Length: 287
Image (cartoon, rainbow, N blue to C red; front, side, top):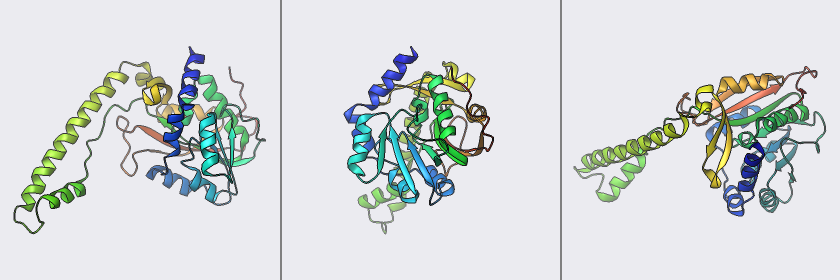
């Protein structure tokens, strides 16, 4: 079963349509931008794991003295090489980084919950161990991971867009303008709440019956890209897991930043860990 799950994930990321999707992405989330600006300093050597279509490449390669992007999907690597022909991209599995020497990077980044796609657990553990190995003492490991207890959805709507639409219907100087805005706002808010409620019910039905929800750690099915098996962990479980490899927590924050994170609302968390100077730990054997 674990081998099948691993093959399913790799097959999904090798699909040309999936590679094209990731190659078209060209943004950083607010959370990523804050973390990169805070912990990826100019002149650092950076290993960008699960680079996908190069979404994080423009920012990281600009500040790094040496930048290497790695992915285990050939179409993803080809897409990156086409977009950034002067940069170094490698086809490799994140759980086996033998191409890189010990202590060769100041920072390892694994964005977009890429670490969660490494199944079974032993493969995830080998990746963390390899990240520890290639990092210099004091180097940082930056990654994100799904929250298995994310079952609620915020009801969001853009008030500025509502007002803009109202101005297309009636002049802002018209005495009826405030009433039009009110009616449209109520309609949009109702739609947003109903949509959020339906999505909440869907997530509750999918997750509350799973052991990962109650344990705070485990694998869940994700329908993205034709179906993936993903690893999910609550922050306390992630911190405990990384401590076993001699990583020390520096910071974690919800992907919904600048909003406050919530145990049942936040979809995933970003983590920053540092490699401590004790070289006798972090090399535990993986089953």
